[in-house]
Length: 231
Picture 1 (spheres, rainbow, N blue to C red):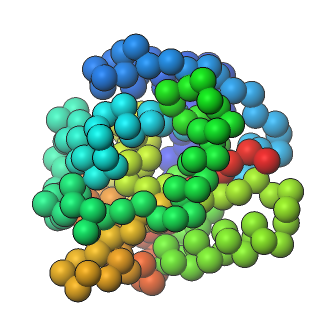
Picture 2: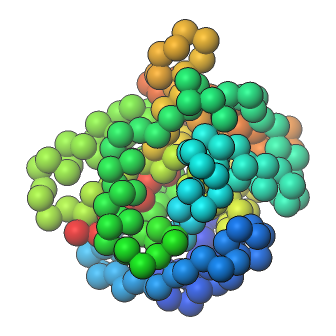
């Protein structure tokens, strides 16, 4: 039976703890600035917890290089072997790019938190969109945003955010039975050149596996991880 381990409680102390851990494991972040925002009950109502993510441009000059770098950090410090099926494609914008909806949402969070070198926002790690394709989950989020102007915008987490989540909360994906993750905030392409795949992270053969899968596929073993922009 698939399980979804809980992560830390959505509290200010959890934010401080995440900031300290990220600064410890990623040297480039030691002097990065952060101000802990306050979130309303409405902003947290659909969330599992709060996630702290460094802005990718603190690590590299472009998004793909930042993804490649943070995946390397996970590979070095994880207690599990990391099997990367798409290693050469991560740093290539012809094979991996930000999804438009997620890019807009993260830009909005950055505008809300202008003093921060980190993006701090409510999130859920997959339970909410289990057994639904990455494409369908994105369509559902877009439709919900159109119908309710007061709804805090939900968006798919990309590979960069999901890897940060696993660096902070390795217990989230630590055994075969844990819910695997579609990273619907990114778009991926194979040799065809069509961006109709997404990055995925699963637990297989005693370790983590990073690969690309079609964005229309559904699987009870997978859920789409998402973040929320507070209204």
